[in-house]
Amino acid sequence: MRARAYWRFYRELLPVIAGFTMINIALFGLMWSYVLCVTLGTLLGYLGFVYFKSDQFYFYHNLGLTKWRLFEMSFTINGIVALVVLSCLKLLSSLLFVNI
Image (tube, rainbow, N blue to C red):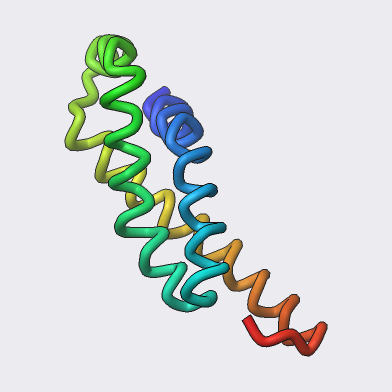
């Protein structure tokens, strides 16, 4: 049950993280965008959730999850997902001979 709650919380953060990552890929390239996506992207997504959807923390609190634990797990999930996605983008760009 907790895995579903962590995944749901991460999906709530994903639009902010994805938008931030796309901007970083355009500005800084693929490798720096990974670092910024995992660190600042997760933080911005979390802050956006706190600002816009703070009343939903009661749902996670009733499951026994703290804000800090939600942030830790979303940071971990984001690191894994970003590694897979950006590795695929790097492979695709090397196949197409495009330098990202």
